[in-house]
Image (cartoon, rainbow, N blue to C red; front, side, top):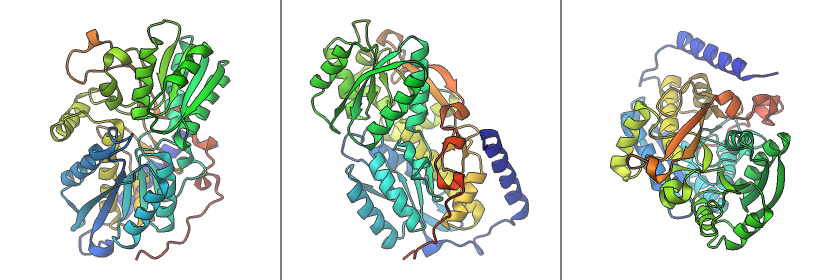
Length: 422
């Protein structure tokens, strides 16, 4: 059985071997395709997920490149961006153009699970790297895993595991799901349902709403009439914001009989809906700007540029981009498999994650945090929104690797032969 300790030990040993056996890489013997490292930021710039990713994700990647010096192994690093419009076909077509025509080496952000699944598959075929920070579907490290992709920031398993277990311990044993009707929402509901039912809780029903819905009244009435103690929001972005606002309009959160649980909530959602409506909401976060001195230092730099505090997705885009560039420097090449091996051999230690490790299935394992939204009277300064109730160790937060259906873990898969990079 493969466990987390064994995975960490292998990573540490491989890192030590690489450090001892590989000579220092110079610009003269480095191998950079096309003499440029190109990073493509594929995100939602204008839609329902734009506030939690979007322009902030792009700026975070640019900050990482700047802080790295703007080059690696003597070659410039370029950043491209595109709005995928939350459509998998648009994302796949643009990714293909980036790989074939513009020679992009790595695509990141990939907010929206359908988009991420399409691009990860294409990146693997084209022998490029894909780093998923925005999407949460656990398929990315299960049946849709690849040897050239990383799932870095969060996933639905970690959110469900942390939030659902905490609420169940507090007596929230009956649930109703308000679920976005697409890949992410479906996966979130399945993950949370599994936790609830395995802990002797009951699911009393669910309602599926369209992506980017404008009216949640009928869905919230179904949730209210179910009598469930917990209404789980298996959605994200403005859908989550509008769900919370609708719950307030129906005075659900004031009744004392029902409460909301967020399954994919980010600090921009709380900012958008306000503390008055969101107070008391429990959810799991991968990052909080006000956690410690390191998080505050970087987040204030981000705020100077964006005039808002970063989400976990945006912070992860910075962290993963730096990790990718460092792996190119250490490996002496931008070859996808060589870079991936180096990324997996090197622990992640920065303001986003401490002692993080990228497993064989591509999952970057790091601590998560159970948080609760403060009441307006408790907030002492702008963006002072969370009480951190608990730290969930990465080994407990994410799906155990021995439960993964990833081919690299089971040994049934081999990296496909790389296609032409032209």
